[in-house]
Image 1: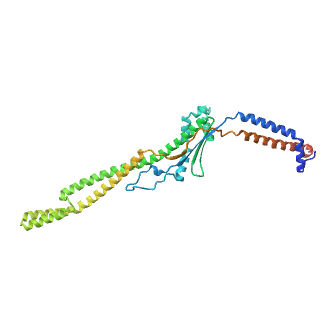
Image 2: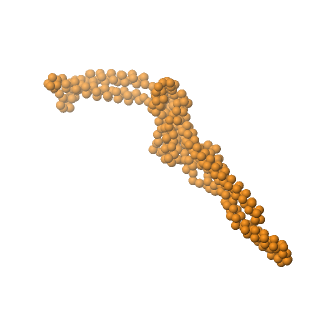
Image 3: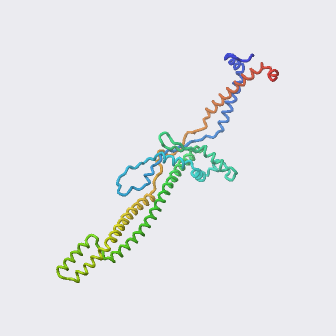
Length: 334
């Protein structure tokens, strides 16, 4: 037959080779069926959750009875959970907890054991952000119960790690408050001692009423002709006036430090209470349940794909072989 130039010629060639094409396709179907039957069934367990706001782990500010608390986290909170979920620490803990070296039949003492198990886990462990800003964590395994356990454990580990991140920040803030409170207590003690000495030195005991009392006593002494008493009171008033400014200044500073120290201690108490109280870094929408239906392999797709590939390849081969019969290869090579 001459080289096919039209669609009719192509169909004619395929018709001539139809038995061979169908034979190759049939063999490919049988081979695909046999191979697919040896493939293990995998089951996917999925858990979904939202990122919780960091506001849930923060104390309520002093003097603020009510506030608008965000319960769901922002994109930053979501990105933080995704980063934690894909970290090597989470995967390493899962490998240890479920002895995945043994489960995946990988020798932990082999040269590339860590690389192999990470590749294996990367294929079976997946975490994504949905269009509704939720996070879906899925794990595939040949054991459906184990898949669910790994998925739930991974989610809990993400929650614990996110909590630890917030707790570490709170701990640093607590340490900062402790240092500040200790420093202010020492300063307050120094101010208190100085204030006591000044009051004793200048006989200043009441900044608001002492002047009026002394002046009344002086006036009374003069009216009674008590010159010595009057002189003593005048000396006392002079001494009082000399120390009034210094005592007043230090007294105001002492009161300000005392007030601020009380506020810092209350903030510290609230932060400590928040630090000691557990909180969830994520809001679980759906825990991973034991999957009942396999996720893969899709054996029918494998068989159909193999059949289509074999048919197209054998058809192309038949066209090439038929066309090459009429080629003078000697002349062509020259």
